[in-house]
Length: 339
Image (tube, rainbow, N blue to C red):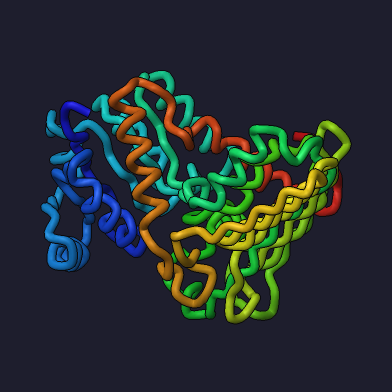
């Protein structure tokens, strides 16, 4: 790149920590020009922790011609409005997952970005873990053969104090519970590896473990276009928290991605065992207990996409697929739903 991508950060809550670390490590590609929160305390804490410039008005970001893109780290129900503002100002957007609180608003958000001709990337950083990238290359090369079965398991732990935070796990602010907030990472990665199912039968529930509006337990059966079957389970009740798992069975071998560990066994005798260099996933009581390595790779890809005029690896339109899957699981109530 001949010049750095000027970035304005919108939202300085919990999610800003790995992003700040990643942005500082990418100083040769990006420059943080403004970081905004309506909270003076959050602005002060962010500036002290990271030494990055802050602003007390969002207008300062959208009116600054040096700002090429905004990194949006606000609650899901604010995303559509902020993307509309960015589109009007001609700023590209890198948006923390999920896109919005429901499919309808997510689709509207993507349409707004596309109509304005701005680049829309989404922060689903698990696709950039080294083990996930290795498995993606194996799948793209067809080495597992035809899909037979896939399972995706997200077994997180969140104490009640997590949901006691105002708005956390509510339909109005977050769009729900474990599926849109935690499991979306694993489900998006699964879809990127094997594609979307065509029929979904699911259930969601709120367990006695938590007092919350959204779901903290979910399960679904998936039927794929080629006849392959799949299963999804997700919860924030699994103390003390466990790594995300994706297991894929093909007619030429099997693969298991357990957190940052990959194991592949092929019929031709090939064995692949890889341990990713990145660590953690926030599956325990501390949601931020993971490295910023995958965030760094995702932001670098977004910056390159803007510079090259190409689609980012995790585009807003691509992410609509996982939104449709999650909506189907929630709305199924035991009835098959065709995507």
